[in-house]
Image (cartoon, rainbow, N blue to C red; front, side):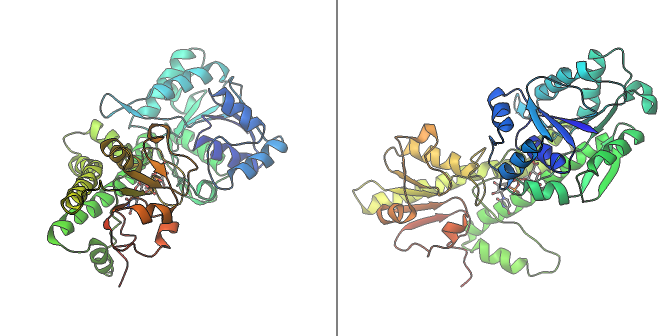
Length: 416
Ligand code: SAJ
């Protein structure tokens, strides 16, 4: 089998590499010419531990090559972004463009797999676009098991930062448009995946992926709601959760400044948009998690007002962390970045940032805030806002003599 990986981003590139490591011939297709050039030199354009080494080995061995022009292959795996537009409606523009771009090189017997997280029905829609382009081939929606082209949905599930390991070890849900499509796709994934590959239909596979991320979002929302309740009732939420989690059937997640990243804050909306009347908890969870940054900002404003009551010097605010989760440099859709940026605009010249994972501040904060080492930011600060639970911050002693807003319980949540 040869594979064409369509989309060489955070999911597609590690997936291409994992198949190529197993000796499968992989062609990577992407619209970004500079990313394609880099990949062909064995360099990555995304940050993922271990990826660059593995990529170089597969490129040197001749198993992986990237291009901007579609080429024939036996299987096409599509991993392009599925963002939302017009409020919270899923936007399948990239899937449509990818499908139409590979259609001319499809041949009888090929397999097309959609890996992108998608609303229910997207795989069938993709099959429709392919059929529009290729009237000379038959597709499962009309020809069933007799179709020339097999089509499946196999949602990716990897945790950024652990991509190479999770791609191999995680179980996979393989949703075929027909049973034959599923078993063909399963045989392909089994070339690289050591976890179980479980066959189902494509609509169930689409919903399974959305359900996994919604489950996590709802559980984080529960923790975030508890943090607001505990603040009102003057209870330490971190201690509370530790205690409640001693129950054998309770496992509460951790509150934070909000939910970031490209997936958990997006995917639940796909369910809400397709079943708005029924998806009540899922919608409420999104609203709770999206509301958390406002709550944190209100806490900072309160601290600034308290400082102003006792000092005629403007408060210095130190923000600890910008990343969307601990120990990575990924600032995409980060609530920490959102909060730090808004504080920088609201309190110009008063904000310092500590983020050991970046070398410079994002463009819109440059010249407005300072990027400092932890000790320097602490010594001049009046208010400390802890936004990311990086290990570096956990290793620090709890700051004293400051107003602290600790959204992750790194310092204020320590067991006594
Ligand atoms: N978060 C909390 N409290 C917690 C756990 C997480 O506030 O107790 C926050 C994080 O700080 C972060 C956000 O949630 O801002 C999301 O982080 P995450 O580590 O939960 O997940 P992602 O977005 O990195 O990856 C998720 C994973 N999905 C699940 O764990 C169900 C991953 O397996 C998926 O492949 C990925 O989404 C995806 O691509 O859909």
